[in-house]
Every structure is written in structure tokens, then in C-alpha cells.
Length: 111
Length: 116
Image (cartoon, rainbow over all chains, first blue to last red; front, side):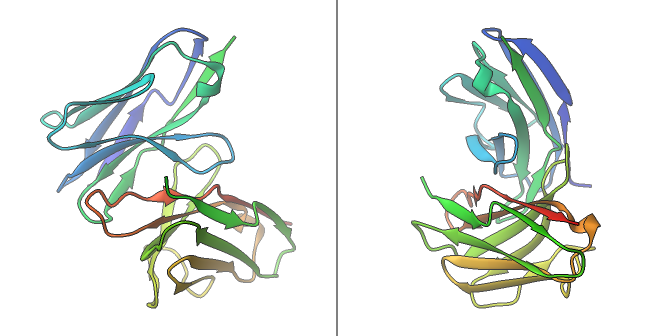
């Protein structure tokens, strides 16, 4: 069964701290792994995309990693800001438009 | 980057009425558009995939006669919720894409539908 599992479901951190979100996927065939940021009441915005052969991709304070052997990905946020409060969605793509969404991790950054 | 708009952003309608949501790709031609539904604290659930000029492909469990999708041009797709019920209240998000190496989807800002 194709699925994407994210952990934790929610996370509260203090502003300025770092955090890491986890994603495990079982999607076959597998081609790409994306991370999206979704602000409340808005559509998702792409943060990073990695093909199956890539191990890491950075976008500013966001760094995603991918281990295609263990089918795990992580999203690391450095020096968190209040504006980072959002849901972060991991998406595994299986070629073409086959797209499996995770349930997301809700991140709350507090001052 | 590619911009996708949705209209309206919020809509309240009475039970039994129909409501239309528009999804537009503003600066590119979208050969494929997707419609998602998202309930509170849940992830996006794909409802249907539409290709310009052809009938939409609906996901299992989504009633095609209740959720009418029209992709009449390369920049516009519409979702019409017919005979709306309170349980149809949700956040509806569209995305648009065109065949490229990464098949990236560009998401609209979403439409909050409330059926009273």
C-alpha cells in the first residue's frame, strides 16, 4: 500500500531553536520526495524537491534529507522564526502525477 | 514562479444550492489541473484530475455528479459542488501543472466552503 507517514503530528518550539520533522514513505515506484509548507487557510507552497538519487537539498533555513534505501526523509529547520508556524507536508511521487501526501506536521513556533 | 489563483476565497451557501469554484493558472498554460479537499487537521485528499478538453478522472469515492469539474481551457478549471450539504463544508484546493521533468504542481490559495 502506498502511504506516507509523518512524525510528530505536532510540535511546539521556541523561536530561534532548530527542529527536525520526519517522513517515512512506502511508494513504489518512487521518483521524487517533496516538502511543502502550508500556512493555515492557504494552499501548500513547495520548499524542496529531491529525486531518488539525491540525499540532501537546502532552501534557506530549510534542509531536507532523503535516504531512498530506508525510505526516510527529514526536514530540518534552523533558527526557527514565528513565521515558520505552519503545517509541513511530505509528499512522495511515484512517477508522472502519482502523488501520495502525508498528513503533515503542525509546527508552532512561540516567542 | 507559477501562480495559481482561486475564486472565491470564501463562500457560504445554503444547503441544497450549488456553488462554483474557479481555478486559474495566471502565467502558464496548465494541461493538467487537480482538485483536492482538505478537512481540518487533515492532509489534502485528491478528488479528481482533469486534463484540458477531456473529462475529469475522479478518485474512488468521489461522486462525479455531485462534484462537476470542467477544464475548458488551458488556464481555467471549475469545480461545481451541486446540491451542497453541510458535510461538503471543507477547504477546496486546486493545483495546476504541465508535463515537465519534475511534474511539479502549483497550488492555489484554496477556497473555504461553508454550507449552512
